Image (tube, rainbow, N blue to C red; front, top):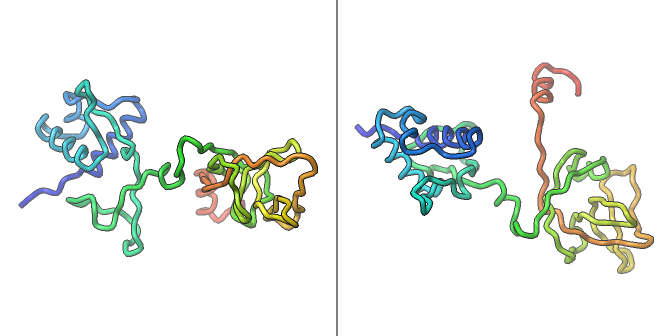
Length: 209
Protein backbone atom coordinates (compact mmCIF):
# COMPACT_ATOMS: atom_id res chain seq x y z
CA UNK A 1 0.00 0.00 0.00
CA UNK A 2 1.40 3.38 -0.98
CA UNK A 3 1.85 5.80 1.89
CA UNK A 4 0.26 9.21 1.27
CA UNK A 5 2.79 12.00 1.05
CA UNK A 6 2.70 14.98 3.35
CA UNK A 7 3.81 17.58 0.85
CA UNK A 8 1.30 20.16 2.12
CA UNK A 9 2.75 19.87 5.62
CA UNK A 10 6.31 19.92 4.32
CA UNK A 11 5.58 23.06 2.29
CA UNK A 12 4.16 24.73 5.39
CA UNK A 13 7.34 23.92 7.34
CA UNK A 14 9.51 25.33 4.56
CA UNK A 15 7.42 28.50 4.41
CA UNK A 16 7.76 29.05 8.15
CA UNK A 17 11.51 28.37 7.98
CA UNK A 18 11.99 30.86 5.14
CA UNK A 19 10.07 33.57 7.01
CA UNK A 20 12.14 33.05 10.15
CA UNK A 21 15.57 32.37 8.68
CA UNK A 22 15.30 34.33 5.38
CA UNK A 23 16.84 31.39 3.53
CA UNK A 24 15.85 27.83 2.66
CA UNK A 25 17.77 25.01 4.39
CA UNK A 26 20.46 23.05 2.65
CA UNK A 27 19.84 19.48 1.55
CA UNK A 28 21.91 18.33 4.52
CA UNK A 29 19.45 19.94 6.96
CA UNK A 30 16.23 19.21 5.08
CA UNK A 31 15.72 15.72 6.44
CA UNK A 32 15.81 16.81 10.08
CA UNK A 33 13.66 19.87 9.40
CA UNK A 34 10.97 17.83 7.64
CA UNK A 35 11.14 14.94 10.07
CA UNK A 36 12.51 12.48 7.52
CA UNK A 37 15.08 9.79 8.24
CA UNK A 38 17.42 10.28 5.33
CA UNK A 39 18.44 12.51 2.46
CA UNK A 40 16.66 10.27 -0.06
CA UNK A 41 13.24 11.06 1.42
CA UNK A 42 14.00 14.78 1.56
CA UNK A 43 15.19 14.71 -2.04
CA UNK A 44 11.92 13.12 -3.19
CA UNK A 45 9.88 15.74 -1.34
CA UNK A 46 11.88 18.55 -2.90
CA UNK A 47 11.55 17.08 -6.38
CA UNK A 48 7.76 16.95 -5.98
CA UNK A 49 7.68 20.56 -4.80
CA UNK A 50 9.87 21.57 -7.73
CA UNK A 51 7.56 19.74 -10.14
CA UNK A 52 4.56 21.45 -8.53
CA UNK A 53 6.19 24.84 -9.14
CA UNK A 54 6.85 25.89 -5.55
CA UNK A 55 10.64 25.58 -5.63
CA UNK A 56 13.37 25.86 -8.22
CA UNK A 57 17.07 25.12 -8.45
CA UNK A 58 19.40 28.10 -8.78
CA UNK A 59 22.52 28.16 -10.91
CA UNK A 60 24.56 27.54 -7.75
CA UNK A 61 22.66 24.35 -6.99
CA UNK A 62 20.73 25.75 -4.05
CA UNK A 63 16.98 25.78 -3.67
CA UNK A 64 15.01 28.97 -4.18
CA UNK A 65 11.29 29.79 -3.77
CA UNK A 66 9.30 30.57 -6.90
CA UNK A 67 6.59 33.20 -7.19
CA UNK A 68 4.11 30.48 -6.23
CA UNK A 69 5.91 29.48 -3.04
CA UNK A 70 3.55 31.46 -0.79
CA UNK A 71 0.49 30.86 -2.97
CA UNK A 72 -2.61 30.18 -0.90
CA UNK A 73 -5.19 27.46 -1.57
CA UNK A 74 -8.35 28.68 -3.29
CA UNK A 75 -11.28 26.31 -2.90
CA UNK A 76 -14.07 25.85 -5.41
CA UNK A 77 -17.69 26.02 -4.31
CA UNK A 78 -18.08 22.25 -4.01
CA UNK A 79 -15.79 21.94 -1.00
CA UNK A 80 -16.63 22.12 2.67
CA UNK A 81 -14.51 24.02 5.18
CA UNK A 82 -11.13 22.49 5.95
CA UNK A 83 -8.29 21.02 3.97
CA UNK A 84 -7.44 17.34 3.77
CA UNK A 85 -3.97 16.17 2.90
CA UNK A 86 -4.02 14.38 -0.42
CA UNK A 87 -1.67 12.47 -2.64
CA UNK A 88 -2.23 15.11 -5.33
CA UNK A 89 -2.29 18.89 -5.50
CA UNK A 90 -5.67 18.98 -7.25
CA UNK A 91 -9.08 17.85 -6.04
CA UNK A 92 -10.73 21.27 -6.07
CA UNK A 93 -7.84 23.16 -4.50
CA UNK A 94 -5.94 25.55 -6.76
CA UNK A 95 -2.85 27.45 -5.67
CA UNK A 96 -3.32 31.20 -6.01
CA UNK A 97 -0.72 33.81 -5.14
CA UNK A 98 -2.46 36.64 -3.32
CA UNK A 99 -0.53 39.35 -5.14
CA UNK A 100 -1.50 37.90 -8.52
CA UNK A 101 -5.14 37.76 -7.44
CA UNK A 102 -5.14 41.52 -6.78
CA UNK A 103 -2.45 42.86 -9.09
CA UNK A 104 -2.57 42.73 -12.88
CA UNK A 105 0.17 45.27 -13.59
CA UNK A 106 2.87 44.96 -10.87
CA UNK A 107 5.15 47.62 -12.36
CA UNK A 108 2.42 50.25 -12.19
CA UNK A 109 0.68 49.24 -8.96
CA UNK A 110 1.02 50.91 -5.57
CA UNK A 111 -0.58 50.32 -2.17
CA UNK A 112 -2.45 53.28 -0.69
CA UNK A 113 -3.64 53.38 2.95
CA UNK A 114 -7.27 54.43 3.37
CA UNK A 115 -8.04 57.05 5.99
CA UNK A 116 -11.53 58.13 7.00
CA UNK A 117 -15.06 56.80 6.54
CA UNK A 118 -16.21 58.52 3.35
CA UNK A 119 -16.42 55.20 1.44
CA UNK A 120 -17.90 52.92 4.08
CA UNK A 121 -21.14 52.27 2.18
CA UNK A 122 -19.03 50.76 -0.59
CA UNK A 123 -17.28 48.51 1.93
CA UNK A 124 -14.07 50.55 2.02
CA UNK A 125 -13.16 51.17 5.64
CA UNK A 126 -10.72 53.31 7.57
CA UNK A 127 -7.46 51.38 7.87
CA UNK A 128 -7.93 49.38 4.67
CA UNK A 129 -5.24 49.32 2.00
CA UNK A 130 -6.24 50.14 -1.57
CA UNK A 131 -4.49 48.35 -4.43
CA UNK A 132 -4.14 51.15 -6.98
CA UNK A 133 -3.06 50.73 -10.59
CA UNK A 134 -1.46 53.98 -11.69
CA UNK A 135 -3.22 55.26 -14.78
CA UNK A 136 -4.89 58.43 -16.00
CA UNK A 137 -7.44 56.48 -18.05
CA UNK A 138 -10.20 56.19 -15.48
CA UNK A 139 -13.85 55.84 -16.45
CA UNK A 140 -17.10 56.89 -14.81
CA UNK A 141 -17.91 54.45 -12.02
CA UNK A 142 -14.28 53.62 -11.25
CA UNK A 143 -13.02 54.02 -7.72
CA UNK A 144 -9.95 56.21 -8.03
CA UNK A 145 -7.11 57.58 -5.96
CA UNK A 146 -6.86 61.26 -6.79
CA UNK A 147 -5.21 64.52 -5.87
CA UNK A 148 -7.94 67.16 -5.70
CA UNK A 149 -7.21 70.76 -4.75
CA UNK A 150 -4.11 69.69 -2.85
CA UNK A 151 -5.72 66.78 -0.98
CA UNK A 152 -5.38 63.06 -1.62
CA UNK A 153 -8.55 61.00 -1.57
CA UNK A 154 -10.21 57.75 -2.70
CA UNK A 155 -13.65 58.24 -4.26
CA UNK A 156 -15.88 57.14 -7.13
CA UNK A 157 -15.30 59.05 -10.36
CA UNK A 158 -18.37 60.45 -12.10
CA UNK A 159 -19.10 63.26 -14.52
CA UNK A 160 -21.49 66.20 -14.34
CA UNK A 161 -21.93 67.99 -17.66
CA UNK A 162 -18.67 66.36 -18.79
CA UNK A 163 -16.83 67.71 -15.75
CA UNK A 164 -15.28 65.11 -13.40
CA UNK A 165 -16.51 64.95 -9.82
CA UNK A 166 -15.59 62.64 -6.95
CA UNK A 167 -18.46 60.93 -5.19
CA UNK A 168 -18.20 59.55 -1.62
CA UNK A 169 -20.13 56.51 -0.45
CA UNK A 170 -21.29 57.94 2.85
CA UNK A 171 -24.40 60.12 3.06
CA UNK A 172 -22.64 62.40 5.54
CA UNK A 173 -20.24 63.62 2.84
CA UNK A 174 -20.91 65.76 -0.20
CA UNK A 175 -19.73 65.24 -3.76
CA UNK A 176 -16.34 66.82 -4.37
CA UNK A 177 -16.33 69.24 -7.28
CA UNK A 178 -12.73 70.28 -7.98
CA UNK A 179 -12.17 74.02 -7.80
CA UNK A 180 -8.64 74.18 -9.14
CA UNK A 181 -6.92 70.84 -9.58
CA UNK A 182 -7.88 67.22 -10.16
CA UNK A 183 -5.24 64.63 -10.94
CA UNK A 184 -6.24 60.98 -11.22
CA UNK A 185 -3.40 58.98 -9.71
CA UNK A 186 -4.85 55.56 -10.45
CA UNK A 187 -7.78 53.17 -10.37
CA UNK A 188 -8.52 51.07 -7.31
CA UNK A 189 -8.31 47.40 -8.33
CA UNK A 190 -8.84 45.85 -4.92
CA UNK A 191 -9.01 46.38 -1.17
CA UNK A 192 -6.91 44.59 1.45
CA UNK A 193 -8.13 44.33 5.03
CA UNK A 194 -6.54 42.62 8.00
CA UNK A 195 -8.55 41.65 11.08
CA UNK A 196 -6.82 41.86 14.43
CA UNK A 197 -6.88 38.91 16.81
CA UNK A 198 -8.34 41.02 19.59
CA UNK A 199 -11.45 41.83 17.54
CA UNK A 200 -12.05 38.16 16.79
CA UNK A 201 -11.59 37.21 20.42
CA UNK A 202 -13.98 39.91 21.56
CA UNK A 203 -16.65 38.70 19.16
CA UNK A 204 -16.34 35.16 20.49
CA UNK A 205 -16.88 36.48 24.02
CA UNK A 206 -19.91 38.45 22.88
CA UNK A 207 -18.40 41.83 23.65
CA UNK A 208 -19.44 44.99 21.81
CA UNK A 209 -16.86 46.57 19.54
